[in-house]
Length: 499
Image (tube, rainbow, N blue to C red; front, side, top):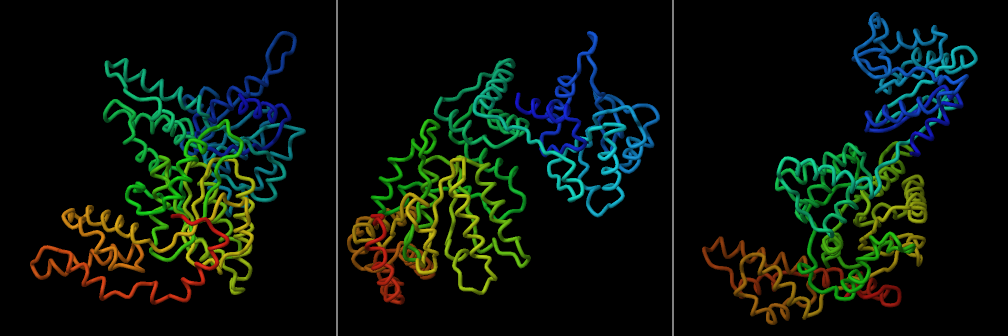
């Protein structure tokens, strides 16, 4: 096991400080105990290894086996006291300090005591293992330490956990139902979590109905996101869409359908990277991004570029790095970068922040190892840096134009049916002709306004009310005619038409 091997090497090298960042404390302690046993030196037929202790603020110093606190250990319960004790003891030991991170912040005495123990290797030769979910060492301790990360469970280990939980339920006379396709997707979606978290989510998925079904996947994805997200700027979009709810975009739908299986095929070296959807506001780019996740059955994360910015130097870049790391841990997933131009447009007024954000994003695109499919949406192509548009950054740039008459008819049908106005669908050609130049969002709003107007008068909504709302609306194609014409001209030679 790599975890134990890495720990064993560091223990044999008598590394004074080892940092072990993990949420899975019990597994970390088990790996450490096995590593200590593995480092036992055979001398005249006897196995010699340093004793292992664990310290917590609640129990003080406890011998390996992790039973009751040793008698007389009350004085060793406080962090400074246990470090003074270890500094005075000459018999070498391995000591796991659990959740020690709060005592390092703004506490020079604790930092100095740790440094004293680390520098006294020629005398005591202790190894202190700091186990915590997050550990940032001061600079004076970093050079004396080494970091180890516990490997997260792979697909085989996750499947083993699912089988174990299913067997446990079967032993109680309740057989667990599942199909191979749903199981495979569940395994994919649980990657990036610790063993304990995987087991907890699997258990919650099968306990309610004794089955792993398609309906369990969104809840598992949301729970996974909540476990991983630490007040970041990425949001989990629980409600994805179906492409049946999206009018038009025929070429884009075909492009996605041809790549659906390839994205999660581990045998393929070149997997789909992502797309950019450029187009007029309200043309359906956001709905299309949601539909990608719905079509591929993947969790959808939304990255708000506007929320990345922070007034403190370097914080914006850190926010982006943490967001991208979260996406990789959620993989396989769809990462929707909404209105990306708002975060990367360089107008010279942000002290170079947008350039640094762009650099971080491009580096991640080139180096990412996990299957994260990017859907970037943009309204203003002139604000985007050319580096982002270079071939190879993303697979394709699609232009989402205002809908044609046939597509407008489909859009009317979708929105009318969703509001119980199926009887008006037959009037689709008439409505579509009257809505020339309207975007999908503007068509929807006209229907909503007509329903409100009819309701206020105590009438049923009909075609005439919708036509009246259309006639009273100036669509963006009129209000922003020059800008839309310029956008179309740019896209003509550079983009693939989405429809």
